[in-house]
Amino acid sequence: MSLQRRNANTNPRPTVKTVKKPLLRLVAFRRLWIAAAFEGIGDEASRVVIPIIAVSLLGAGAMEVGIINALGMSAFLVLGLPIGVWVDRLRRRRLMITADAVRALVVLSVPAAFVGGVMTLGQLLACVALISVADVVFTTAHGAFVPSVVGREQISDAHARLQTAASAVAVGSPSLTGALLSAVAAPFVLVAAGISYALSALLLTSIQLDEDIKPLRSQEAFWTAARAGLSFTIHQPALRALFLSGMILNAATMFGSAATAVYALDVLGLSPAVFALLSTFAALGGLAASFAAPAILGQLGIGKTRILAGLACVPAVALTPLAAALDNNPGGRARAVSAASGRRWLLTPGASRSVPESVANILSSRCE
Image (cartoon, rainbow, N blue to C red):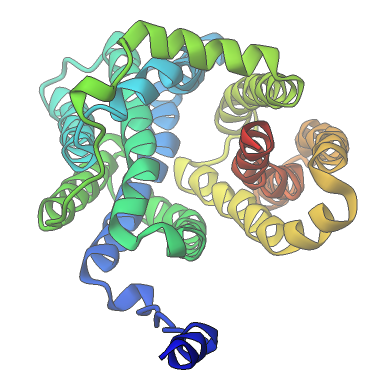
């Protein structure tokens, strides 16, 4: 009897391998993937078209466009942390649907005001501010919702799929926007953005699953959790460096985008449709960076990669003013601006994509 027990204890148990189902065969992920693509189309269209409306129809200058860009980015800096705490306590799918619905209504208010002859720069500023806040809510909730859809084991694959869709949208959306701008007035292009947000919301509504939400009793007080997150970011040297680097990069993007819109439309005399198409080259630069980033990061690490990416932006940005020297050649001017735009963002997106992974490594090392 004891021999039988000994043999039973020494025999290895057969291992059961779990077969992962392809992500696109998961109905919930497929709908989330398509919804994210529609949401990206709405984002790209509104990001490009609103500055065009401000400059070409309302006579906005560099200061006004700079304020528009600042409002578009400031919500991530000011509200990112409290919204992150808030998202952890609520249903993420409902938050994403609400964010889509808000943005759809906001962007559709612009063509409605244009038709009624009451469109103003103040309205555009208010719209950008609301879109910015909704963007933060959607982006934060989306990142927290993915594990509930695919499980912890397939998070990396899911994010890769979502990033591929985002890259495809970033490359293709400017062409669609440019085609619409050549056919209709700029405010009416925002109708397409509103429809995209609405389709995203409808797809998210069709996803039915249980979300991993902490019980109320186990949650910290809201401001206690927010202060803890801010304190941790400030006191961790690596996180602090990444945070400050991101702030500086966003500020440079804000000022550069404001100057480029006014410069291209007013000084160079490019049409709104051509200006919208220039975003394709920046997206292609980001797509090239996404393929090159893994090898570069493996060789240099995130710190050196981000430094080189920042330095690579300097000569690219310096090329932009040279477009004015191409007198009576709008095609050459557009190519000069687009080449600078594509080179400017060639390395930066690749470095930026590695930030979440680096943050995760920092948190893991701290917990060990």
